[in-house]
Amino acid sequence: MRAELIDGKAFAGKIRAQVAENVARLKSGHGLTPGLAVVLVGEDPASEVYVRSKGKQTLEAGMASFEHKLPSDTAQADLLALIAQLNGDASVHGILVQLPLPDHLDSDLVINAIDPAKDVDGFHISNVGLLGTGQKSMVPCTPLGCLMMLRDQLGSLSGLNAVVVGRSNIVGKPMAQLLLGDSCTVTIAHSRTRDLAAVCRRADILVAAVGRPKMIPGDWIKPGATVIDVGINRIPAPEKGEGKTRLVGDVHFDSAAEVAGAITPVPGGVGPMTIACLLANTVTACCRAHGLPEPTGLTA
Ligand SMILES: NC(=O)C1=CN([C@@H]2O[C@H](COP(=O)(O)OP(=O)(O)OC[C@H]3O[C@@H](n4cnc5c(N)ncnc54)[C@H](OP(=O)(O)O)[C@@H]3O)[C@@H](O)[C@H]2O)C=CC1
Ligand SMILES: Nc1nc(=O)c2c([nH]1)NC[C@@H]1CN(c3ccc(C(=O)N[C@@H](CCC(=O)O)C(=O)O)cc3)C=[N+]21
Image 1: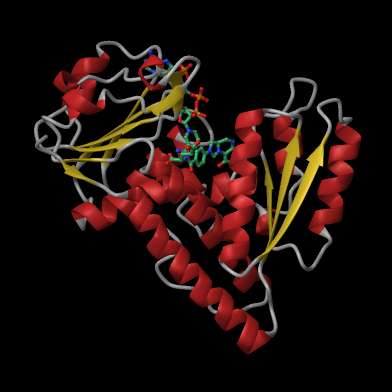
Image 2: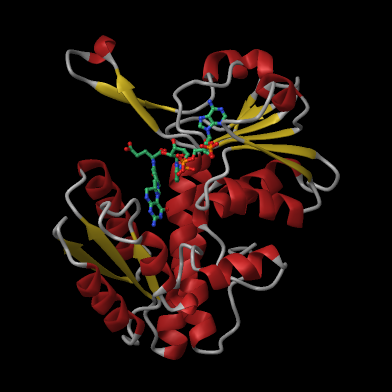
């Protein structure tokens, strides 16, 4: 292996320590406890694991955690009523509605019902517009975590060719906005992109957010490039025993690590940074809600 490994797990630990320091300062100095409410509709086992780990890390940072688990047949009006209640609750500074929602619910409508100041996912149209115009906003956690790792790794990103594979509202598009904000020359690729291999080979920074296990091989990667693998794909792992599974990214790690300059692993890369940034956004939201100075280094 030639590439340097970018240790997202360790980096996330440092971010969480900074979050905890800021929480302690808000508590002792201002009598404030930042609070995060997570809303989960339905019984997806993967989402439940993820929501539990968010709740645990929220408490570990000294914050308040509110979990709302609703049945999969929850009516839209009931979900909207819960959001209205959380919007009005002064002890809640951040609201996250776990996606995807069951098909009968309109996720755009639900997300846009969240008070933008409490929208710690950064998915509300106001925050999307603010980010797109370079104004202060809530920045989506996964792209924010990726940006932090890239800045830490490379220093300035200015003038670099960045290719983002994937154009979702939750990862690909906001990632591209952040890279543009740091003066990269940005290409967004997707399922209709022609000659994706050639597009990827131009990238000094390659961000993969596709959801296809090991799709990007080493020979699509420019020698020395920095590779950020957002993909979280669970695949069968018969070598671990019958019925066992393991997580892999969208990048074929072994071949990519022979070519790249630096690469994030899966697990232990972007995933832990996403949760750390969620906590960071909650602290930022709490500070803004009370007109207090924001922590430095925890926002874009
Ligand atoms: N680490 C973390 O914290 C997080 C990880 N993830 C993971 O990141 C991955 C992407 O998530 P998300 O953005 O929500 O996924 P979506 O399914 O919403 O988007 C996937 C994107 O990949 C594109 N795509 C699909 N197939 C191809 C292909 N063959 N070639 C090129 N592009 C393709 C799609 O293109 P088109 O638009 O044309 O259909 C789409 O834009 C998933 O593995 C997910 O689990 C997601 C969120 C957080
Ligand atoms: N409103 C909303 N906001 C989200 O940010 C959001 C969402 N909905 N829906 C689902 C996706 C997925 N996502 C992950 C975050 C962390 C890990 C993570 O910590 N992964 C660990 C491994 C965990 C394991 O072992 O299962 C790692 O990569 O090391 C994974 C996935 C956030 N998402």
